[in-house]
Image (cartoon, rainbow, N blue to C red; front, side):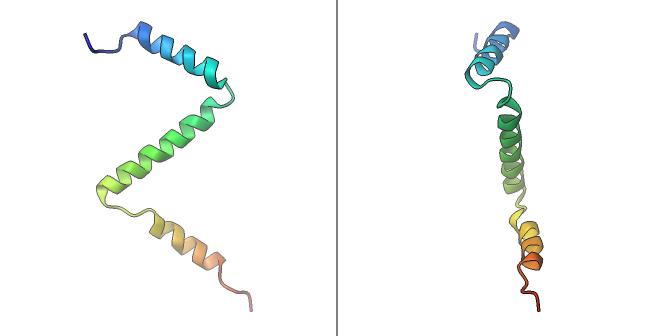
Length: 64
């Protein structure tokens, strides 16, 4: 009682395919992966925005 077996998982996968279609699944998984990565980084105390700000600041420099 309480665990998900193979039939339940298959039923969930079929329901997701019917609801979202095959083309949306990779996009949803990519978003889920990014969310999990950000969550893990936050737990480890890492700030991923510092890496992004260094790249954006070099691009934002005015051209003389």
